[in-house]
Image (cartoon, rainbow, N blue to C red):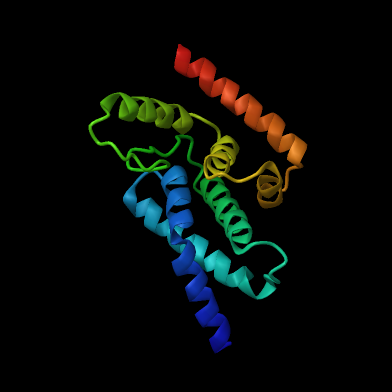
Length: 162
């Protein structure tokens, strides 16, 4: 039991950036982000004994975090999407490049308008996950992931051009 607790804490510390990114997508304010973060960690702790290590830790973590976030949204019956104001998908190296920052903000604004599932898929895609990894995390087939991501990219492209 003690070893499990130490392993669990180590996993959380090593991957808390993933949890923060997900909470910033699915929660509307700092208070809700804290609550969602705690709920994700709690759900991970509950499912930790059943984690056998067959999948990568990050795959398991994404699956638990995304499912918890979606359940949280359904439970609170929120109809608005969380703002992505301080969510950083990209590391902007050149602070002087205002055109780049403006384009990234425009993309963030349009990602904010996506559905709950679309946000999760695009987050995983932007994190560099393969279709197979996204399929494992979400439960969709790799083909379905590819189709959905194609539609999401087209939707973003169309909406941004407007």
